[in-house]
Amino acid sequence: MLNSIIKYSLENKLVTVLLLIALIAWGIVTAPFGWKVGSFPSEPVPMDANPGIGENNLLIFTNVRNPIQCRKRSVLIVSMGLITATPLI
Image (tube, helix red, strand yellow):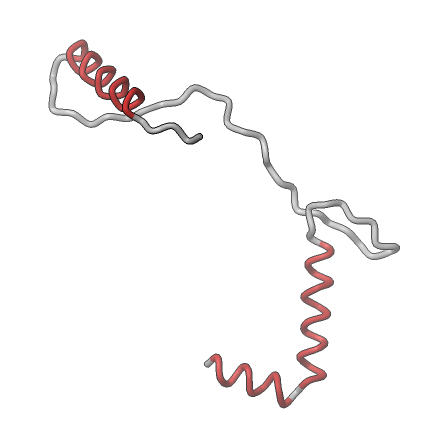
């Protein structure tokens, strides 16, 4: 399949160049940077770069029936994991 696409592109250079120009134009139209390119229409795709500042949640599956005992064990496991975690610096 890839060989046939390459062969077609080499045999039909005009079509290949026109497709490349169309792809570049589509990239400029949808670029999230708000570029002003003359009368060229610009419809930037919105980007969401806000960090999640909500509370961190942890879901633990266990066989313990007593919720208090389950909480004690899970807090111990998470605490030990945080203590023994290697620093990123």
